[in-house]
Length: 221
Image 1 (cartoon, rainbow, N blue to C red):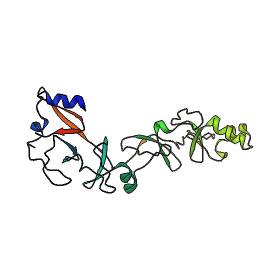
Image 2: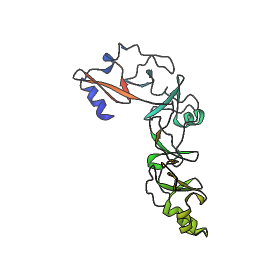
Image 3: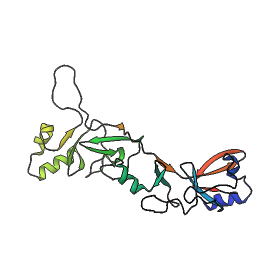
Image 4: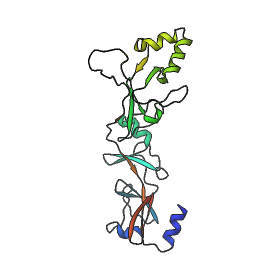
């Protein structure tokens, strides 16, 4: 931020001159008053005083956040947005899953690709891999068999019986079938449909006549 501020002080043309005639008459979308500050925030195509950009539910200031969330013209912090609009969360890290992310599904849970790994050894599990689930945690086949062994079950019996072992989920059927084999994919990489898109605060600057987008704040003449 300090470097950006120095660049503006050295006479680089103000971004306001290239933002469709905003000029000095810029009103804050939060309080409705004119913005006289040197910097203001831009979110959902509206201008805000740094202190006026707040979550409409909990009133938490968002001027120091990298992103905020918008819906029906209202601004939300991450926590309230997830709580109110039931954004799908990863079954492991419990953070939100973006609309354009590929996911892995197991039972009724959804995971980031990098979160779909064995809880014991951390090895990533891919589409087609065998895995087991216990208490909401994912295990690779060897470590799930070890859990069975510790519970008094025969690990070899687990390995051969496949789906007959409670909680075991092969991503492809291990039973012999007549005719053309058909795969069962319980863990599937697929885009997650979700209409909520995070709104990023940016800073516009103009260098050598070419507009470039930087993060965060905008200068007002």
